[in-house]
Length: 145
Image 1: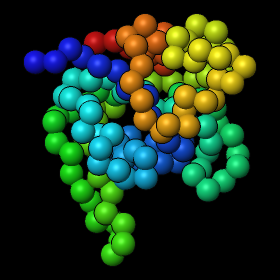
Image 2: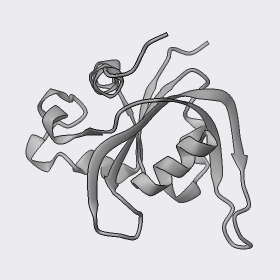
Image 3: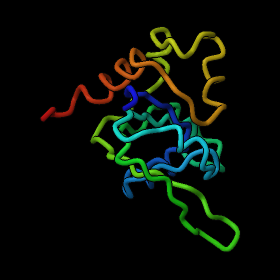
């Protein structure tokens, strides 16, 4: 069995909220490949640069956190021409937190002046250190059970 990994997905807040409500994630315009890199039990955080995919209103916050629920990647036909792939995620109730105060402490952002660059990839692995920093902030006002 592989060691637990941690992932960051760049998704608009509107789409992140749709995913959390449905218990799924869809990344990189529905591509299958990135989702196949995750395994059941891996941790995932969603960063939302904008409120909506098409809009310009900034969000710049971590908006959701969860755990990969199983090892299944599945297609979902949304229209005749769009069949994106999804993964089931067990999302945890959390607070949305702004990224700006955390930038100095995050190792996956090597250039603090160009902090948005890593998110352009849409989906990437982060270290446990960064996952813990972000998750501790997102969950600090929640009851742990």
